[in-house]
Amino acid sequence: MIGAALRQLLDEEQLREGVGRLAEEINGHYQGRPLTIIGVLTGSVVLLADLIRLLDMPLKVGLVQATSYRGATTPGELELNLDLLPDIAGRQVLIVDDIFDTGHTLAALVEKFMALGPAQLRSAVLLRKAGRVEVPLQPDHVGFEIPNEFVVGYGLDYADLYRNLPHVAALDPEDLSPQHGQKQSAAASGENGS
Ligand code: 5GP
Ligand code: MG
Image 1 (cartoon, rainbow, N blue to C red):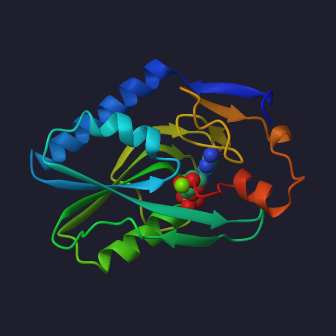
Image 2: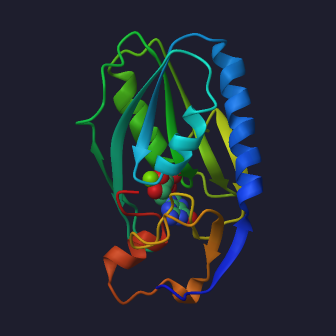
């Protein structure tokens, strides 16, 4: 897949500005009150590293992993691993993910987390895809609206590659190979421990 056609959508400067905007909104909301941020592995790690350094409150950081196994046309089966989740009871909690696509990942996390009794639960994503939402829920903070294309870079992968690109790029559909069957088509629609 190295050598696949990538079209840059957001350059490093735009990403820096977008993450700065997110941080301002989040700082504005919490006003210095303690916060627990929960990053969704693996795609959120780059955002998480950049974002938390701009936040100005007593901050704890935890992680969960969300993996969806999804065919091109079939609905996804989502697997959540909460082993690394710290105690969130009574805490103000912010879920941070790379991208909001259909919304099923965030909806499932919100349901799980609410059962653990946080004082408040909100969410932030770097990217939101236009016209894809399938749940009655939206993230509280969104860095960028993007068109409905498969994107990689800045933490986002295709088949576990490209996470280290410093910018966000769209991968052309002909490069989303169906050859590995479900694993690949799942990645194409947003799979992968991402
Ligand atoms: P949702 O559950 O909202 O449909 O999908 C959210 C998850 O799917 C994201 O956390 C991300 O892991 C993955 N995803 C959705 N769209 C894309 C995309 O365009 N590129 C990549 N790399 N992952 C995506
Ligand atoms: Mg993900």
